[in-house]
Amino acid sequence: MTPPATNFWRIAGMSYLQYVNRAAGSVRSALKEPMKSKLSAQGEFSYKASAWVDGTQMSKTEITSLSQAGK
Image 1 (cartoon, rainbow, N blue to C red):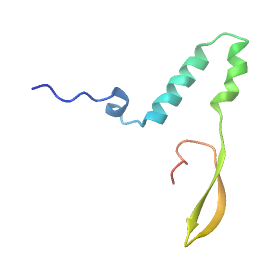
Image 2: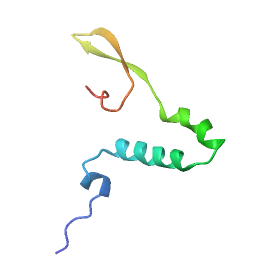
Image 3: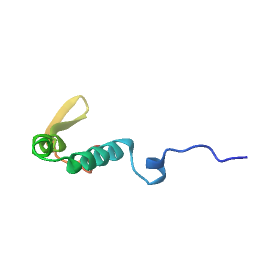
Image 4: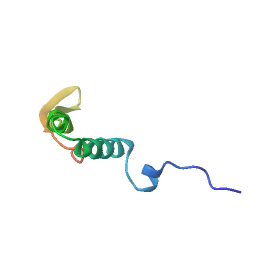
């Protein structure tokens, strides 16, 4: 019996989002100018997240990396 198929990013211990971001970063770094500088800004992101406790919104925290997301 063959083992069940598993996605290689899962075997590597990454989430799908981490895999997609690394792949997109690799593609952007392989581009030539002027497209490389034009698309380099898309590699950066940030958003504000806040937790809710007992129906009240707590203070907002700026998220600037995937390692901060979900905490």
